[in-house]
View 1 (cartoon, helix red, strand yellow):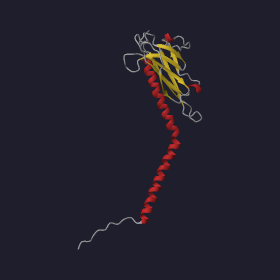
View 2 (cartoon, one colour; view 1 turned 90 degrees about the vertical axis):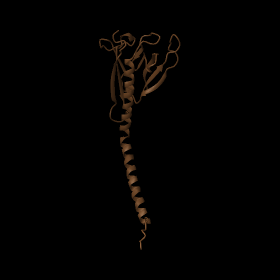
View 3 (cartoon, helix red, strand yellow; view 1 turned 135 degrees about the horizontal axis):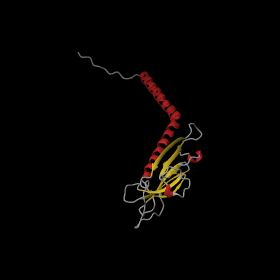
View 4 (cartoon, one colour; view 1 turned 120 degrees about the horizontal axis):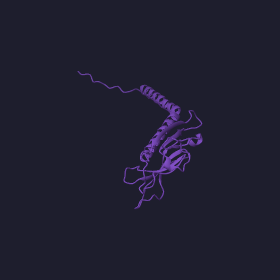
Amino acid sequence: MKQLSRTRGFTLLETVVWVGMFTMVMVAIVTTLIFFYRTSNYTIQEASAVASAQHGMDLMVRTMREAAYSSSGAYPIVSIAPDDIVFYADVDSDSAIERVHYYLSGTNVFQGILDPSGDPPVYTGSETASAISDYVRNTSQGTVTFLYYDSGGALISDYSKIGSVRFITVNVGVDVDTNRSPTPIYLRSSAALRNIVGN
């Protein structure tokens, strides 16, 4: 005669022990994650801010290198200042040349874009602005964002001499919390104005 196999279920004591062990493991994992987040939060924020600033700087430098005469024939550079530059460049690979404006406002670097309109083309209206870098501490650290050089490599301090600009350096100091160490992380890059470098 065949014996029938019987399946044995968990007893109440085994269930309580299993639930208790599972709860302890989950509490340990959650506690570890919370501890990691609290101790690493500043580092994560700082790394994110540096990555944002690097992306913004790459965008600025790449666009500056493509500075060109406007769709109306105006000179490539409109104005320069320590924390502000306006010039013309094709930022979206269409047939028109846009007016580009990079500027520091508070702790953000902004990009403003103005498309030409009409025939002949004119640059009127409000530019579309967007923040491309945050936690920028140039103002509080006394650092200028843009430095301009002529064809001989001399620093331009007279910002009315836009026709002399051939080379631009971009400096950005990034710090999420100025009350904590380390000090701001400085990023620097440069752009030669390809379309007017020989002029």
